[in-house]
Image (cartoon, rainbow, N blue to C red):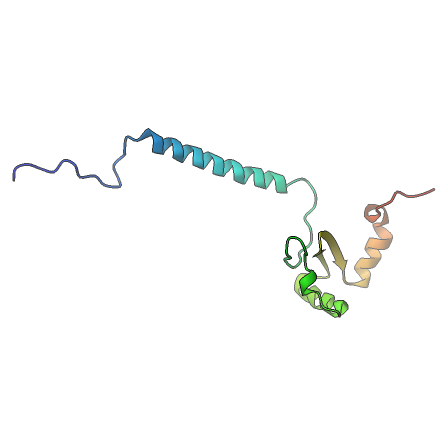
Length: 120
């Protein structure tokens, strides 16, 4: 009975297994690098897009569109605000739902929103 059990170990004791330490350091490093890469990729300097509903990858929001899209857009404006994004198929659209905002975009921001250059 005088013999003690010296092989008792607990979670607080440090193990001398270098492989586990290497795996832990590599995994943590890869995870941190992946998070940093994702954050820097999203911050490309462009202004953020307006809010909008989630959509499917290939078809976008098409399965949820009703034949009465104008009333659906009014209801979506109550949820997301007067300007929101909508993905239809693989194209991203920005819906402007008030005449005042449409006037600003069409008249005042014409050069920024045009897809073709001005002709003299």
